[in-house]
Each structure stands twice: as C-alpha cells, then as structure tokens.
Length: 165
Image 1 (cartoon, rainbow, N blue to C red):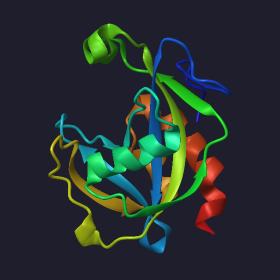
Image 2: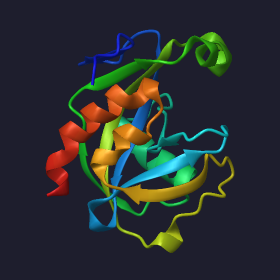
Image 3: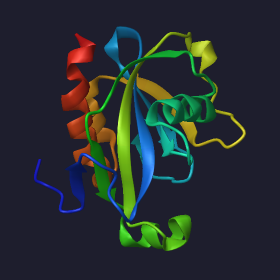
C-alpha cells in the first residue's frame, strides 16, 4: 500500500485533529468487529471509534464508545496502542463535521476481547452508528475500510496481530 500523505503516527495527539479512540474488538474465531455506517449508502465498514471526552483516558473512552456504538461493554482490555494515528478527512467531510474545527482525527487504539454473546450486540442504541455488523478476518479490514482510513487500519492490524495468535 502506498503511503497516504494525510496519515501520520506520533507519540502525542496531533494538534488540529479531533482526539478519539478506536476499538480493535476481537471476537469468536479471532475475527474483528466491523459495522456498516448508517450515514452512507455506500459500503463503509469500520471498527468502533469515537471522541475522547475531556478528562477521559483512552481506555475509559473505549469502553464508553463500545457501549454507545454496539450496545455492550462486555469485553476485556488486551492492550493500548503505543502511538497516536492521525488521518485527514476528505475536505468536504472535514468542512461539515465538527463545524470544520478539525482536519481529521488523531486516534489511540485499544485492543479488546469480546466476552459476550452475539445477542449482547445491539445496534439500535440511542445514537445508532451502524446498520449491520460482522466479524471479519483481520487481513480483510483494510479492504473494507474507506480509502482515507486504510493506512490507519493497516497499522492497527500490524500492531495488534500478536493478540490473535
């Protein structure tokens, strides 16, 4: 995969980017959770993610976001990424999201193992983000992601691959 000029990695959150958390949720048979975004008619599968509220740590934000996005927090934390991954949103999306305040997102990723059953996953939450979900092999995540997130997903899979063994 060629490098994306809008992607970077750093030890600290990147200024001008929305601080958020991403969740690498490992399920049965070592598949990883992805959801189809509700706000698009196109194929747009992604792992759960969301903003880090003031005063929250990435680990606390990850558990909260998991509950908000998929209706459950039945998971154990396996690890937190060693770095922040930042990506630019396409200009049209950046202009309408968060009143144009951010160029993109800077993310700390958290790996978790799902401890619940499929019945615990409920997409019809108070602020639904996904219309469908599935477990996918980690090597398929990059192919399912929208183009501006592919470098992030490639890096996350590389970092957490050892947890799938």
